[in-house]
Length: 252
Image (cartoon, rainbow, N blue to C red; front, side, top):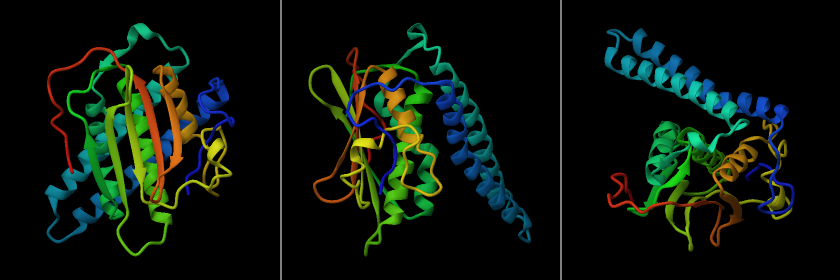
């Protein structure tokens, strides 16, 4: 089951207060710190072998370094959201942002035997915004989806599907679907609400932060249950100019 936050009406804006901003920074540190701790333990195990597996230990230590650098970038990006200056925005390739988000979490998905399926539309127009916050939205959605898939007791392997494509007008969409148990109808209107959560260990800021970031990009975020099973979260972002090159990260 998904958890998150909303004020009961899709598309309305929730102001980012200092308290929410501080809590969001703490929230966004939890996952990378857990990853660093896990990788540090793995590195120690590789080094304690006889003989030590230097190659695997080195690869794991590099992953720790990358996670640390990304965490610092995420904190800086969240702090900058409160003083958002459109002049600092970049032109972003949507498929590339999805690729970077997947790289940050694919080891976690593989560890939990969750299949990841990508359906990326090539040559999508650029959107204007900031790369790290937009990637963090996708990472948060993938993390939520992974938790939903793990909680659902099924006979087969769980999966998450990420799609990109046109959504009509001057809008592109990023959609994250999962094979979890979906979102209870009674909480569906509230999952983007700050501090709303159904998990005992949750703080209810992941989806609230996603909503704030998407709205700062001039878009909106929607949640629904899929026709078959599981949840579906859709980001709608206004695009700018068309591009001619195709994404090199298409996968089945």
